[in-house]
Image (cartoon, rainbow, N blue to C red):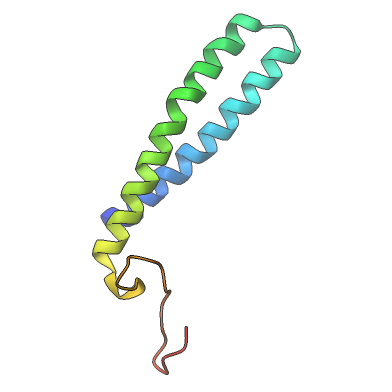
Length: 86
């Protein structure tokens, strides 16, 4: 597995964790477990920037590993088949 692929998988797992923590905090709020909800909300707030940073690292690694998928400005252009179609 390439570095870009490994970072993308990690970012996906962290994205799921961020969403699950948000849902858990909301559920704990509804049942009145405010202390636990605050703890989970803190974990959510700490995990969210980590997920975003890893996603940026995955995108950067992919641009380095597969520059042919990007234009001169670094924007995604996709994979072109042998006939030049995107």
